Amino acid sequence: MTKLPKIALILLCLASLGISAINNPAGEERKTNAADFFRHPQKSDKYNEMWSYVFVLDNGTKIYVNYTWMYVPTQGFKIGTDFSIWNFKGKSHSVGRQYSTDRFVEDKSTNSISIAGGDYLMEKLPGTGHRVLFSANKNGKKFLDVSFTSAVNGVVQGDGVFNIDGNKFGLYVHIPYGRIKGRVGIGEDTVEISGYGYMDHVWQNEKPAEMATRMLTLSMPQQKSFIAGRIGITKNGTPYGYSIHNVEGVSKIIYPASVLENEKTYNPKNFPKNLTIAWSDANIPPLKFEAKAQETFSILSNFEGFLERNAIKLALGELLYKRGRSQTEQGKLDWTIAGF
Image 1: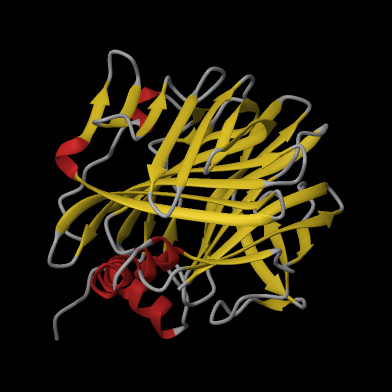
Image 2: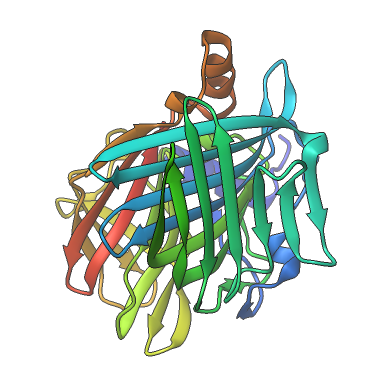
């Protein structure tokens, strides 16, 4: 009988128990840098990469922007941008665009990433002065031009790469919190805005639906302490990813140890009604919140036509976002729970 390597035996045992094998990034905790910000190309037709922003305005309006490098079946790699705004003068709006990858531009001399032609721009490294520009004229004009007037330093451990059941997942929380100012426009209605922002960046060598059944994004208005980050949950209920715990200006990476609903291990088959996230550092109190959504949003609503929507569905899955704000013992929490 052929002997299996030790790692194979461990993986088989974990699979039989319904537990995912998760290895956190190795290395020292450090600030995020330019190499983290730029694209991390992988040799896989399932590779995808996404730069994501959450902006919570002082009047309660919320804006979400994503910039995605993804593989679309029958079409090859594409660049996708999407913008959605909740409760802009009592209404919500969204738009998505696709571009060929030859319009993707990285300029390392100016630390910027853009779409040739000026529709989308991430300018300067994440931090104070970082700017995001989005524009589209599709079902009406949509416009966003926001800059960070202050920013807490991003933190990552080692190369930021997790090993999840043999697949790779890179995560960089570039801006856990920062104040923002700028303009947003819907149609001919353009207004000055201010609030706070969060920004992170992920890449995967496997389709998102295969690696996470649920994905949580967490951010908080700045206080003496706050928690901000991204947590994935595998189909077996095992959490991965990390958050930044910031206390009076000092940041520390914390990893999720467990995710519970009603004091039991959360089953990610369904969207939760409440969640408790316990951290690997027992000195950090669990984050408990009611998951009552202010908004339910489908990424497919940003794409027109049967063929386009189904191509995106094959590439990313039927991706729904539940978004809300909850009161916790640590303060107000703005969250997104995404699921397929």
